[in-house]
Image (tube, rainbow, N blue to C red; front, side):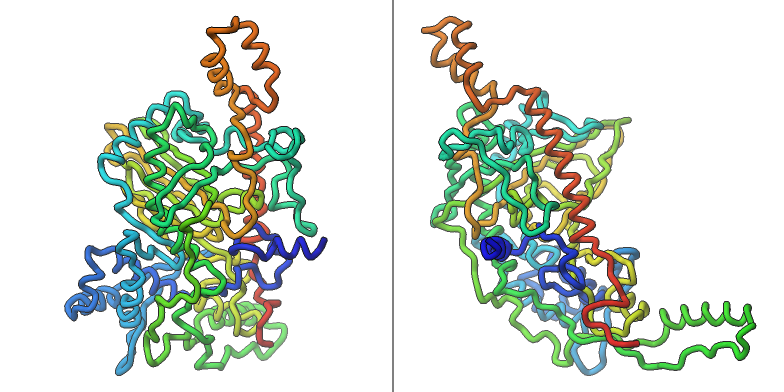
Length: 558
């Protein structure tokens, strides 16, 4: 049985559904902490690649001079777990410098750019984006069709968020929901691994749809989208199939970058080292209380500010090969599983603002969501909103135990800080399509009305991709509609000319596995509470494991 558990743990792609306290030195999927300078270089690179036609101009000398001058004139703000650091990119004499490295590696990003798939690398490794997956007409049609759900949609407590396609309503309920192939028995929850009770829901699971992907990435939903009637909303299905087809190249690129055979390449290797070791002298007399107070203060300042030689890029500059992939993932000619959701955030004059969301991943180990796809269908009259990302990292290595001055200035992490790093943010704009791995937590930033005299909104669509390398999970292909209203409508359509209403209602009462709207609302509330509890545990035991500067896996004795 232990071997079965181990095979389950290691199958598929990296995922965030691990109990991280089992791992000495943090859990980062093998991803060590990235240097502050490296993160600043990523920010510069993304800023360049957000400029128009950068892939046509990046080899031109005036383009390089403009960006070199702009990059070296400013301090780059890098967010860390407990503070924001200012980073000045280095400019070496007679050899490549950090800005030149960023400009040189644009060659690799240009090669990765997928003209056919209409996408490119976004703010950080494994995040991909596009701005042209849906044309104007399809966007307007889909926006209008989804807008019809708004009046009946469930809303957040403050009324700002309407769940147009609610993937959390009518979920799989273990020991209640009927699943085909079980001879009339209900499904039991999957067993937790080892002593891990925190990553699996014992009561609920989200229901994906089975989706067929053709050789040309054309999409067909093989089973219904939960809470979207396939007969009544055929037009929405067509638009979602078209949109999801555009997402296939993005998902393929994200999964390729996430694959274990394609490790991320850090720009700056090596460790920091000090150039001056003389520390402040202690007082001559042990009873000199004022002297000892001054000495302790001087020692703290000395530890944090003594001259340090930080690691830098190799003397030879960018080595090339950023675009090299040892394994390329294809989802073509396959059946995948996708969970679909849509929402609208509506703001009104004198109404509440949108406060953003907490940091979170999608789903639990019950769903094994491997990657997320977000599409901004419409954004109107709102201030700039962003989708931000952070990832769990392992402890930094190669510093003296207790040396906060080294860890803080090199990686932005000090003793007790959470072992995660912020890896970028993408401005949300209408037409944006974005994919990212679920090993990154994400967060919506807050926003408000730009013009306080009129309404504003943000309409978004989510596709959550179930890990295609594991055994398929229970989907709507195996679970008939649980919506009582759907079955009532079907019964009346087929029987009302032949049977009286009383008999039709009797038949409905004897159909197993249905939920009334009130029951579905109660189950949804319990599911939301369970996911909130999982998110808290996921933070504590995965993304926010405290850094122990004294007992890291690779500290050097002080």
